[in-house]
Length: 117
Image (cartoon, rainbow, N blue to C red):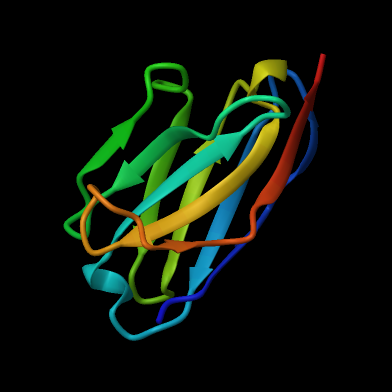
């Protein structure tokens, strides 16, 4: 069983930056694919970025060039650095983990990101 706890959300002005963190429990964190998703009010949850166990990263077109996902296996933590934030980035951001990127079995409780214009 893996537990994920997000932190780092908050209120930021457009153009600003935030770094989200996701702390994972469990000794097998380094073997997991990790990802960030987000869900805005009234919208479906959408993929933001992912990182494989080996460090290969992927990002959605909507955020590509503005976000960086990284992981620190020694700290059992995955990060999402978000720059040049836009009001449309406002959402609850969720951390997810799984044995493969095809299926994420573990989810955090989410952290709110609000970008003011």
